[in-house]
Image: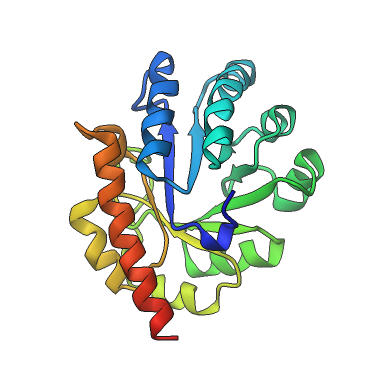
Length: 217
């Protein structure tokens, strides 16, 4: 599997968009399209249900060499043997989460401001999610933070920063110009007519941006 630092495109199978019975098909489409990391997000569903689905998805992602991240359920990540766990500002802290999942499982944390991004790194998060950049149906209660702080966070971050929230093909260029190097895409993938093709389009643009970035440093 790719190291976290080599990952640039993060997909999410969000059961707010995908029916549970279609989650495995969506998982296949996303990994075949080329996502580097894939998360299972199943808000308000019992851990037992998430665990059952995670086992099914993990068989697909592991064979494809793609890390599977579980949102909000560290016990599930530990039992299934997933590569990652993602926690929010109101969830368990990084240290407590690590005691549950073990050292072999990387931990990501959602952040919504520069201060939270700094705090997440002090906590020891292995990557941070930064956003939402735009208003998004995934998290309608969150006020979008815009693009102006991306460059600052990228400037001091010692871990990968995945920009999230309303990112799609039409907005990708301005997100990259603002300083982002990694993005999370949710509804633009899950609602696409051709999921694999949509993933490939964004993956290709991220790849060309990383080549440009490497050449300039």
